[in-house]
Every structure is written in C-alpha cells, then in structure tokens.
Amino acid sequence: MADTVTMTDNRTGKQIECPIIDGVYGAPVIDMKSLYKELNMFTYDPGFMTTAACRSSITYLDGEQGILLHRGYPIEQLAEQSSYLEVCYLLLYGELPTAKQFEDFRANLNQRNMVHEHLERFYTGYLYDAHPMSMLIGVTGALSSYYHEAMDINDPVDRELTALRVIAKMPILAAHCYKHSVGHPFVYSRDDLGYVENFLNMMFSVPMRDYEPPAIAVKALNMMLILHADHEQNASTSTVRLAGSAEANPFACIAAGIVTLWGPAHGGANEAVLKMLAEIETPENIPKFIERAKDKSDPFKLMGFGHRVYKNFDPRATIIRKVCHELLDELGDEVVDKNLLDIAMELEEIALKDDYFIERKLYPNVDFYSGIILKALRIPTSMYTVMFALARSVGWISQWLEMMEDPEFRIGRPRQLYTGSESRDYVPMDKRG
Image 1: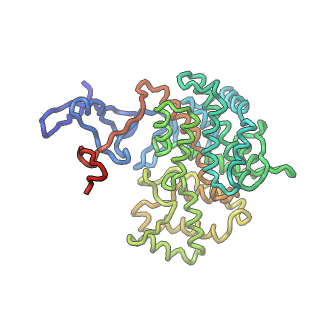
Image 2: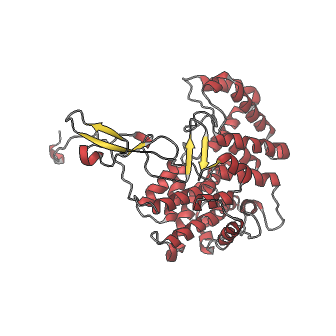
Image 3: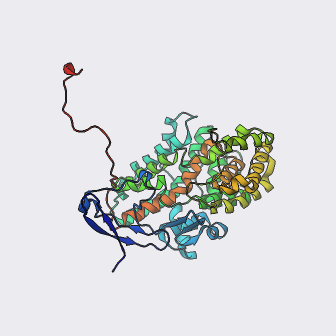
C-alpha cells in the first residue's frame, strides 16, 4: 500500500488519506488534489514556497547541499566540459547528443538564424535610450506574427520547430537591442561561427573592420550562459508555464518570462552588483559599507552575496569565480576600471574570511561574478538582464515543451484566502451616509 498522510478537519472530524509521492531526489510531496473535493478546503502557501506545481525531469537543485543537476548531470561537469549549445540539446531532448545529433542540431538552428526584415524595423519604434529589456519583450512577442503556419501547440512537430526558432533567434534579438541603443547597423548572423562567437560578432562587429573576440571572452560567456540556462521552477519559469497552461502561443509565453525576469528581485541582481560597486567608490570605503550591511537598522544590502535557494553555497559561483579571475588576469585593466576591480576583489576576500559572512553563509553568488564578467566583456549594464534572458530562453522553452507533453496538463488556477467584505447590498449614491 502506498504511503499516505491523513488530513483531518478538526471541526467536523472528517478525514481523508492523501498519497505521498516520492521523486528521484528532494522532499516527497503530498498529493492534495482531493482536499477541496473531500474537505472543501484549499491550502494557503504565499509564494508557493512549499507547493510543487508540476512534475519535471529537467532540472533539480538542492539549496541545502549546493547541488544543481540538468537531466541528472552536475552543473560542474557541464560547465567545465560542455558547451552552451550542447546544454541546449540536453535540456530539450533529455540526453547529451552524439556527434551526428549535435551537427544536425546545429544545422537546424543555422536554418533559422535570421529574423524577418520587417521585424528588424520594429526597433525603430523605440527611442535610442529605451531599456533593452523593453525592446526584447516587444520583439519576442512579435515573433508570433510570423509563424502562423507552425504554431499548433498540439502538434509535436510544430512545438519542436518553435523551440529551435527560440534558441536560434534569441541571440539576434538580444544583439539588435544593443545595436539599436548605440545607433550601429544590425549585423547578420553567420553560420561559420559557433553560437557564442556568433552572438559576440553580432554585438561588436562593425562594417569597417573585422572583429574576433578573445578566446577567454568566448569561454567566459559560454560558461555564463550554461550556468544560467535553467534553474528549476523560479518566478520566470513558473510564469512561462502559467501562460502556457492557458494555451497562449509559445513566443508570448517566452515574452511573459522575460517580463518576470526584468523584476529586480529576479533577474536584475548582477546589474545591482555593479551599481553597488560604483556606490562604494573606493576600496577605502569598504569597511564602512560592510558595517552598514551588518547593521539591521540600515536598509543597505551587499548585492551578490548569499542566495534565496542556496543556503550553503551557490555551486555556480564556485565555477564562475575561476573563469572570472582568468578573464580578468588576461584582459585586466583594459576592460574593467581598476578601482572597480579592486573593490570587487577585496569584497570577495572579506566575504570568504569574515566570520559574519561565514556564519550566515553569505558567500559570493553567481550574480557577483557574472556582473564583473559582463563588464569585462564590454557589455553595458542595461544589457545584463537581456543576457540572462538569452541564457534562460532554452530553459523556458524546454519547460514549456515538457508541460505541453504532461498528461496532467491543465490551466493554472491558484486559489486565494478571501479577506474582504461580507456580502452586502448596493446602496444608491443619494442614500449613502
């Protein structure tokens, strides 16, 4: 007999047995589907912090142990040995590709690495100083205008084609956001370049001279994209799933994920790190800001330290720290203001040694290092969340695909605890006291 939990209504004495479901890893869940039907009750869980809203075989994370797995593969191994494009294949299809499968996958993406010329004119509707995220939201949603022939969400062939289009076109849309903001001509995608090299070329090449990114820059960005590719049921991923549950078109679902990611509590942390470093101004001011961070009455927070989910350490931070230092050692002062770099490195050293940080497990997280990496790659701070969206788009579309294939798929409909007025009658305006 399966394990169960007995739920009792102490007011009536009525009981129901709720099955306990075990996953491969993580806490077991209580199947509460019969709670309302049998006891006429809902659960109350603000922020859904103890609610599993879906079954998923894509990503698993253990915040207490600092574990992150994609399809069972540790993030440490993927970051060190894989490429972002290979991780895209893994997230989409569940297994690492053979050499033939990978070449076919890349060829399929190359067939779709252009956008309609009319879509490129969408950018002219934005002011040159519009935030790149506002542009990315608009043009991503607009993609749905061009693919009416292949957006049957009930057709697995159409779903896969849409996923390929998302992965192929997001670098183009992101790079064009930057090009529009600086007034440069758009650069077309190139089939002869790798995924990361191609993106950097669309970002930084100009018609009058060739551009070749440093190898260490390609390595750092490739790793950063891998580390942000998926992160279980976070706010933006949950938004993509919720929008998809209403059978919205997949490009609209991705745009909804981008909207959620734009929230500073979710995707803006690496940008906040750079703003914090600028606020500190000089290494000499660090002790003052450390004391402010320790003062509970002071609203100031050190950005890029600790993590909501990872209660021990962020495994991605350990990985990205190494490549961050490699990048800075090779490119150094020519790409990052030395004063800013000195502040960052001293803050890192303090956080790794200070008892206050160690006791509270406030270690530098992935956002601390990714902000510095993006700065070193000459990517402006307004583009940081766009870079996050580019990396996470494969996770969003993979989660959407999984949801569409789930036999328990149904429209999302969270419940509420109503605390408003009791039922009352309408009073005409001339009789209201």
